[in-house]
Length: 379
Image (cartoon, rainbow, N blue to C red; front, side, top):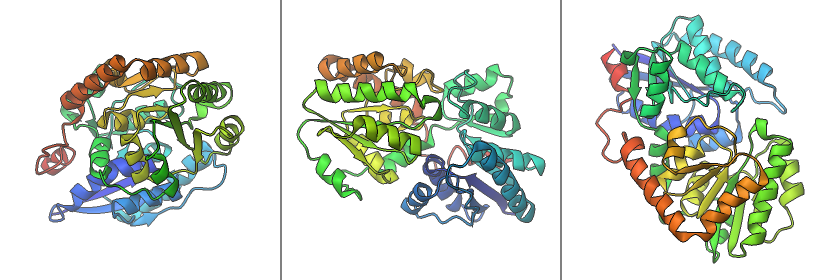
């Protein structure tokens, strides 16, 4: 008898990392009936990611509204998902990562006593409010989860230390790696026409993203001061920043970074554009979680403008430089990578070795059935 698998997500990062799993599930239609449910925690960017992978959601709760609070999103998602689960009665629910949607999906599954599979389980910063609310969300999801799909051995070790049964933990590699490799193209033409021009410019390209709630205020202002300083000190550098739609981020970014002829502030870009921009960048500055997985795919150093990270293995491998949010610290790391070609090359070699050892467990020569699917099939 077919197993009914419900895949729940709500944001673009979740979609890009879960779409390879959905595609694999649908390669086994004799074993699985797959239902894709999205909450619409993100709207336009989520739709673009799904379109890129040719996946249509079976259910869209369309919950996103302007200036939505975490309380609104949590309550609306649990109620909406409760109704869908009650109607569909799946055999298993898959969620991803640490979003409000992932947390609500796992709770709704628990209320119906339905097993949960958590893709990207075991990530920890060990700081309650950093990243916020993601650190607590992923802990809640892991407590509920029946099958823990840890991307790396570090993630598995975190779960072991917290008392989770090793028989329920599976190291799968990071599905973001699969998605990025599938998306990057040597002959890629950007949907954003401005990017087609920017990647042809002489000099070095730096990609920036910044959006985290815990960085609002003084931290983000320090970050933007550092970014402008990098552009001022390095005349061969062009900085590309697709600005997040958050009103606070928009107001702060345009107030502090506009008017510089080598800082290019863009509207948010589609997932394929972002991946192909990363692959063509010299360096990346970000406060993102997902970019810590995507930039190493292309051997690009990332300066992580945060005080903590849930991916310490990337720090140990010199793939990510944890700078904090102070202007001098961010600038000094960027300046070193831009002025010391030996350091830059050593960093790229180190990233390549780490990628081969730790995160390419699924990509390259994948097994006939994904590591994420095997425990579901055998159950």
